[in-house]
Length: 229
Ligand code: AMP
Image (tube, rainbow, N blue to C red):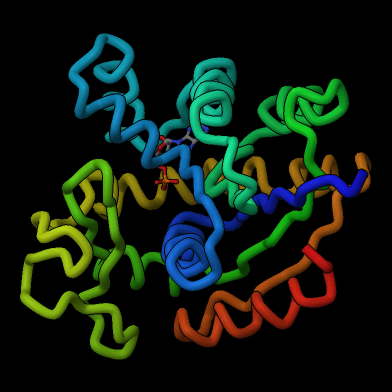
């Protein structure tokens, strides 16, 4: 039986993983699980776990591997039944997470063929991009916008989400010192993660993230066309 494909979107914060995932959902019928969004939903619930996550996010640190993997696992249990292709956005972020996830691929918990999509963008462009990023505050939506006119991702009405009418604001972790810490942590894990993917035989392809989001979607469609998803 042909296994369903699961795409891991990996890349530095601000490289467009969330924006591209959202386009894949609205235009190509994918399902997206973003661990950043799951974290922000947990914070909004006001649980003790949410409080702990809030502290970590505000300081640019990673949520513990076991906790984030449990959140991904729970999402799959609840959401994975309609046959849609799945994008994992922002997970795994460490080799330990990748190992835990891969174990669930091997033992059949997640019966997927895994393909990694690596979004590449340099640090300077990231800082610029994150400084103009705005996000819908409705935790069920979290649509992404940009105040940069060149990106062509402004909401139609200033401060209001086109999708759900929620309030559009800057993320608390999109401030220079937290961005720097998130980038440091990203670079610490990026190479070991890619080594892991190569070792276990996941196919990896690169997308140029330094281009308008519509062009990225086009490149993504061309690349994935050959994968027979
Ligand atoms: P993102 O929305 O993907 O930029 O994630 C925002 C924040 O959520 C990150 O800076 C981390 O604090 C936390 N987070 C999201 N995904 C993960 C993950 N896979 N592992 C650990 N922490 C994560």
